[in-house]
Length: 273
Length: 296
Image 1: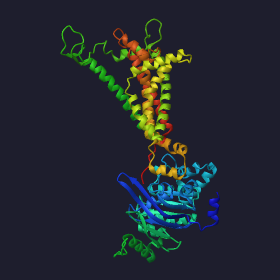
Image 2: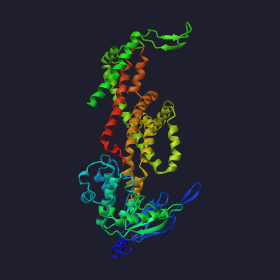
Image 3: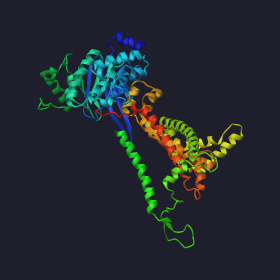
Image 4: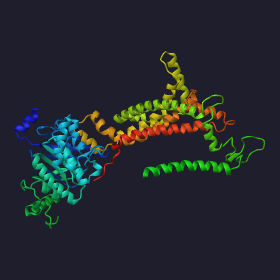
């Protein structure tokens, strides 16, 4: 537990530190370089989005951080420890594009799954579940089953589950990608609030420019063949992510900046969303 | 309401069979209709329509009435009582065979799911095992059982029957378990990995619950197979007291007592229904594992 202690007493240790990280997948037609030369630092409590076209390795990078895959080259440290150790220590919570809820478990039991797996007592579990259900606004739905919920609600359950063990790092792989625009914007605001309340660092994979800008402190722009980081943009939008921000000029300016970084050239119609 | 409709349809189905039987018996030729028969040679030619006389097709009411007459004359109990006790014996043996089959099938499914190599090595043999005819295989089990019995370890004949029944019962369970345990999505497996859950927790919390929708039909198939296996095994190793033996015995007297073999026939139908129905009860308790996840 010394690692955790050092991390909490010295907040300068970054949540994620990648140096020279690369990933190569061997295939029949030769090796495919999914990711190369990634240098990235995510500070504790910072919200960082990874954005780029498909095939740019943004999901791969997230999977490496989560230790769902192993990096082929480079050093990847989560709170100063190797990714594998961080996973075993449950330093992060994760959510995917699909909610991945277990259909035979009620909402409450789904949220409690990680707690159950790590031997948290029944009383503590139910206390934490009601806390989390309130945080994501699903208090009345704890006893429902996933097939009785809308897609947006399922995704909120998945976020609650990812937060169950007070992770200091939240990994999200296009969590709102399958939702309609209105639900999406609503959940973005919710996530901004939750991230601020919990103080967790977030690595957020998306292919939506407005989403990345609205949520993040920094937007990491990536490019395919081979997957790599081409640009990092500070949004500088502060901590208040209210709905009004979506219509502010600074927000539009940042959206344009990210779009230009993505396309590699100034875009004529800057106001187009 | 829907339940009553289902019951009504079921009853209508049985009634339709009964009506068809009596209708054909009434309309069809008594000695059947045979094409290309050679005069004076019995059994020659091709029979297009079966015989309808009382020895070949007894009336349904005769079959039912026969159930309440004594089994084999004298003061033997009514046929229905003999059929019921024989069916119960066979049901018990089939249940033991089912349990053995389910246990073996689950173990095979677990091993094959866990180790690819085991799947590659074992699966073809499991499929081939089901092509061995039961009547060829049953006497072998019986001989081995007798040898074990003589060697000092008690091995009554019914154990051989149960083992043969399990030989048919394990197959659907092994296949269903393999398919079901491998059914969780990638995302669920990733999630369990992110929780640093080991094989055991992943099995208990994810793989087994996910396998339930695959296992329930497999268990029901196994139950039907166990009954068929037990009946055939009784006949082929000559065990007394069960419904299989009774079927053969009464069928042998069919020409003098044509309604009698229908008693054990009905008995074995009831047996199959009871066996499959008991498994359906298991499914009732596991209903929540059959929920589908609505896609977002």
